[in-house]
Length: 233
Length: 233
Image 1 (cartoon, rainbow over the protein chains, first blue to last red):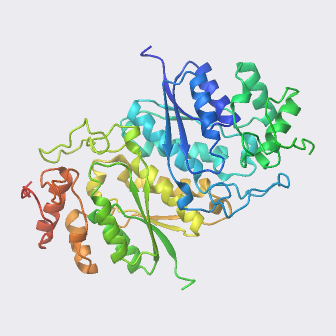
Image 2 (spheres, one colour):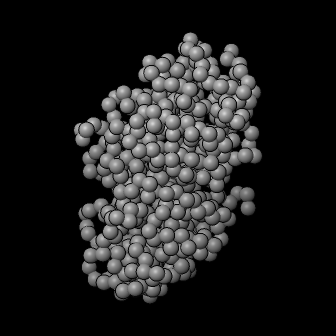
């Protein structure tokens, strides 16, 4: 087992990072799963992260508390900003954007990777996020990979860190298909930004994109919604 | 006051970040002070950070808990790794290096800066750290500044973040002189990695470098050491 590569996989509890982590496992990597409890209003996703880390056989799962609500600035961490429910806007960075979130999460993953001797980091950013969130763009991922070399002892000593973002150019339909192909239960994952008890709300951007993905993939949607999302465009 | 620039200053409680933050204030910036409670063994430095933030008139001081001991890999966060006491080694990355620490801290500062509308970040890395810690090197700071543009909404919308590391090319003696010139009490700051109650140990790298700085600057050292450091080279 000693030659099996070790990866730190960011697992939010959502569908995307579940598929990203499953691809790391399919590539033959041993998994260290990292989730951040950032006081997100959809904290129920952390229960999903635990289910996923266990189902994928992660060697360790760290759920790291990090209260980003101290900074505010996002509907996901600031209770005074409402989660939009009127449909996905195009060409606008949504208020659900959390300032510098992926930079923070990748930095933490990098810290664990370096301490544990892992050189591979996996993050589930995808083409749909890319349209709205700056830190889901391929140039950001490439930029972080370059920084990792400058930032670490391992980098100085000649190691390279690889930041894998295998869903980068996939649509939600591609991702739903990928989950199906990998034989993992998409129902384990959680996408909703504004849960109604144990149910996905069905109205936030994240629910709409999730539901549309299953429809476009021609696959059954295992999600339990409080209100059935409108999957037309 | 509305045109006064707003800065996020990383304040560890140490002498370097105290001087860096004081330079931000001297430059006419309003200060948001950020300290990270990363379960460091020298947690007494956070009390120093509170004194410093208050003395510099920071508008807000956030002490963010972030338990990096979950990852281990450093003498500063892993109780099973001893803090070296035998003198400062040259050309070696010390075991007190915390994997990716400055990447993590700058990412958090960036998140707060973006949420608060600040565009300036200040960090107290210096030439002495540079000789040992990869994430204190000028190329790392420049790399992070480039990444900040790719990582944020503000960057996408055309704003630039500036990462100030004004001590980068200073020695500890320069920094001690700078504290003196700025009229701030160096005795407020805390450097020791392995405190003996309320006293600096006088034997860890950080105590040795601090003590040597005051000697070389020809200034009185306000620090209370458990054992007087050897300040010869």
